[in-house]
Image (cartoon, rainbow, N blue to C red; front, top):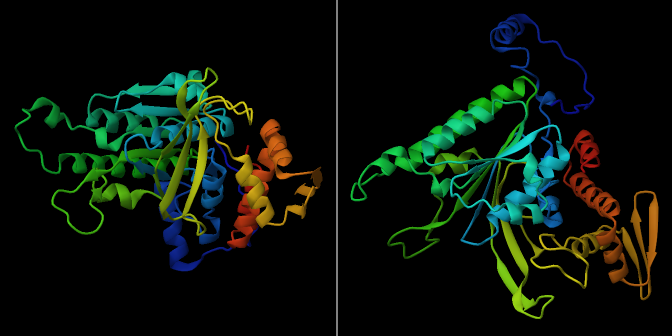
Length: 373
């Protein structure tokens, strides 16, 4: 799928011996093998579905790069991955995401509540780590693939471990397997970009505990160092459950608070921590259904920071581009955004554009942020 690239620049011709060398490189390795630095653009973003996380990443996880979500059990890793899958389906409808289910725990019902079109998602259960490597290596070369999610790295089991006795020691097998996966995917992603195919790889991972560590962080991430070095974005997510009464008056988990920390971001500066709220059961107060992230209060808060939401007392004004909306109180503005997705998305994009401008990003990239769906 072609991506819009319109940054203005003066064409420069490289002559002499270097110019001749570059011509030979282009002839041997393809037309897009060499370019000047001004032709390397900021990648598009895939929205995470959480405004505050998108704001921190300037639109979401980077397209045509690798990213990783890490957390403890029940932290919301698969939930966030499902939100990203739903965004990829919405942003790139001509391509299909692939979910490699290493844990065998894919839940279609919950995925649909989170916005995933399950009929437009390929799910591949994998028995061994080698199968994960082979399948990921194959589907990344298909132009119809937009996103590959691997859930999870920690569950990737080498064939040798599956076939041998539980008493046998297998030191470093998984790390070597994951290292091979990273090298293959990285090579293929670069190759695919040359032919105009951009695909994103999202790893999900779990914390493990180091044995005998008395000081510092006792947690470690499975898969070896190659995995952490290869990612452009790494997010650690947590979960705090809020209980309440459902529509039958039964005690239930009604909302999840998800604090996050961006532990690695090669795409931009900006905030590294934040928190968003996921609705677990239909919320009669806001009208939000289960599986929705309650973004509107955060949008109004940041609109106020950027001078788009102004006023006082019972008179407030929200400016979204050329449009202006008047309210008596903030709750009315929040209700409008909840009811009208187009207005919510317009404010969402505008705030991220303003943040990108603050961080000195290129005009070409800022313009693309306004087109996000």
